[in-house]
Amino acid sequence: MALPPPQESAPERSSRDLPATYRNPWQSLGENLQAVVADTGLRGREFWRRNAQGMLWRPSWWPADLAPLFWPLLLALATALLVALISVGWMALRLRSGVAPLESSNLPISASAEVATSLQPPGEPLPQAPSLSVPGDSAPGEITAAPATTDPEPSVAEQELEPDAPEAVLPPEPTPVAPLDALLQRPQAEGLLVGARVLPDQVSLVLEVAPGFANLSTAERQRRAEQWQEWATELGYHHLELRDSRSGLLARDALVGSGMIVLSEQPQP
Image (tube, rainbow, N blue to C red; front, top):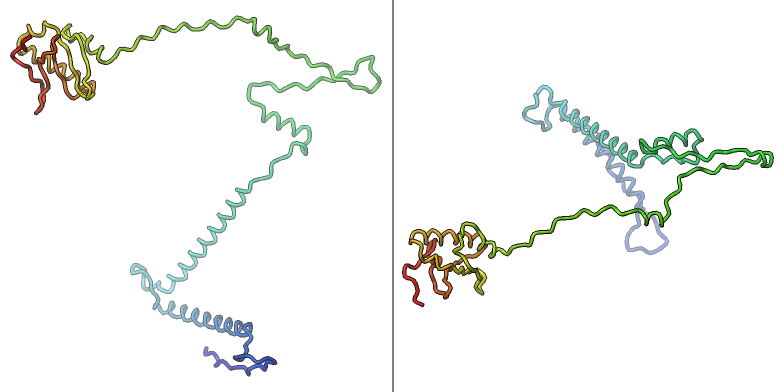
């Protein structure tokens, strides 16, 4: 359907001197909307015509005989999905708003009792309402509430007189032993270690050995020195020196490699 050529309307005469011919924008908008509607209709008819002829794009796995059904099914699926999303969102919004809480003042007496029973914790009796009685000496029609019988609470003086529960006697805590003292008291030392001190660099440990260390064989002294080196490493010290009571060097750790170097010659006094 071909559109008629646009007809230019006669310029409106204005009482004011304007630099250009005035044209009502609302009239232009209406003409443009008509053109947009007509163009949309033409494009829609062209789309369905090409779809019926199988000229539109479709996946390679879609059968050629069912080519006209691809786009209608796709549009229907998209519309159904959009409607489902809108419905789910609307239901979620209604659930989020919630239901207005019930006001206990507007409930009848029986309903209030049911609500109180449901709110009472299981195993705990409900509080009894004060009983009403009509004494003989009271005025006719006057109702007085009987005093509720409750167990008297113990006074502060009685609570103070109650004997306190005996405090549990805790065993005395053992006195902590310094790591170096524990090192000297190890059974494997066999009394050969008599002192320990740390050098100012905080990574070197000096152990003072008893005179009996010199009487051991060379292999035994080597074994003892390597064992004490393992103990020093466990405590975090990188270097170890063995000295006698006169501060003579007896053994030290190897600077290259690992192990201990035990001096074969004893230092002179």
